[in-house]
Length: 101
Image 1 (cartoon, rainbow, N blue to C red):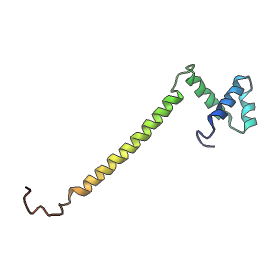
Image 2: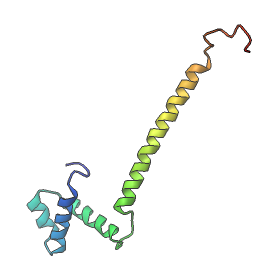
Image 3: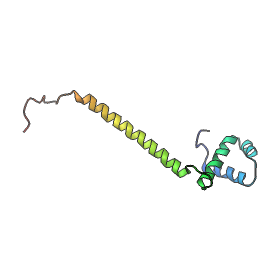
Image 4: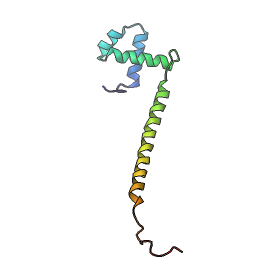
């Protein structure tokens, strides 16, 4: 499965098995997931608990949302710039032949 492909409950059960003393290799083999995935979940849990330094899950989610919003805004700005460039050389429909009142 891809990133974030496992439900949070499943990840927590895996971490509970590891905390209960089961080996990462055994749990990963039994459940058909990679050892690296389990190690990553364990590392993130330690960060979330404040044991290890790093970005918590909430901080990661906030950062991802901010990056996504920035991409959207940059796309909007690009569209407005392109529209401005297209409209730069156009004339008004009335031809500007009469002075405005």
